[in-house]
Image (tube, rainbow, N blue to C red; front, side, top):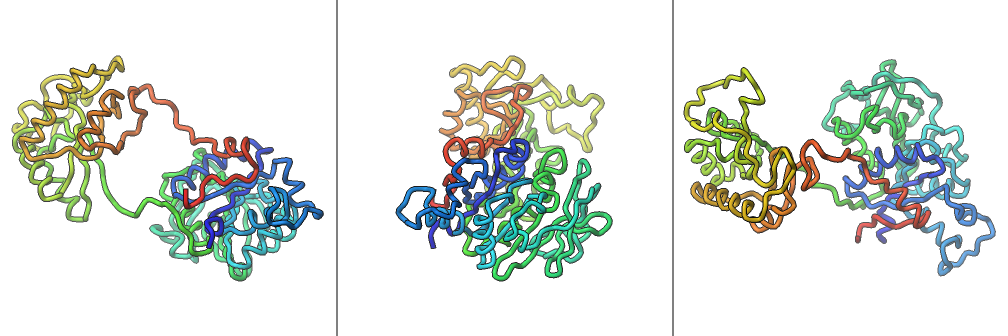
Length: 432
């Protein structure tokens, strides 16, 4: 089986920039995160007419535009995704290629709410009936248990605003999401040998203004892809595991007692330490946890003034064993938190030497994790971190920038980049 046979073809139309941009943020960001191999077909390109003209030569060695090449590029896929509203408004012959491929075992996922404009071959796969306004969405009682994990029937989706969603009741379909009135808002359907998942709320469901990713339901999208795609279907997904990362750690009042609770349920956390605020009891406990593989440890900063940031705070237990806990102000490790100036090489090396002495004294070795206070890591410190084997950043910021000077996150506009090169672009194949 060729790699293209195991890939996803995402259909877009950049003549609709607002819809296409929504697909960038809602779909393409997720596909890359999931490690899914994908290509695009750009309906807005002028070559589309020649791709599906009836008089194109059937020559497999011909350049793009020849019937055999087009048929193979469009039809030989594990999964087709209509990425946004209007993406299903394609030439009828292309629609027939996709519909036939789905019936032969490929999958289809639709985020297109303009189904009335679909060509007949697509509508035969089961087009929705009506558009409703949904204030809330819920997991359907009859939803496939694989698709909804780890959720249960009746769980609510945390919509930030109302959503226009298509609804239907196909005779051979199964609801995934329903409105408060029981109307289907997302559903699955078996199409001969293939499978389809229709998101009635469109790509807008995963837009930040409605729900977005990271709200507990992104797994529904991933599982829909895996469920619908023809097998074998290879991805570069992150292996499933559960872990934890903590910062501002000093051992708390019980010398990292909470870590032992995490270990009981199989979690071995990374802890970012304020090394100037730890007592001997804290260091000894850290050493024990490291030797028993209960946790690994990173430098977070020398210290911070917790009491200054939280006036009136009182600990749950006595902190008398921490003689330095409430003494001194914030002391950073690699850069000045106020000015953003990086410490010079001599200061950086001196700070790493202090870290090395403290860790060595208690039998610790620095984690591969860079776990920096305020996510502030000087560019000049990276070679020193690398020399300590620390090469994985878990900071929610851009290296070399202050916490309060981070750029606003925007997903890369993948489609805009691709369509400047080709309306049929191979950019995410499994072998790459």
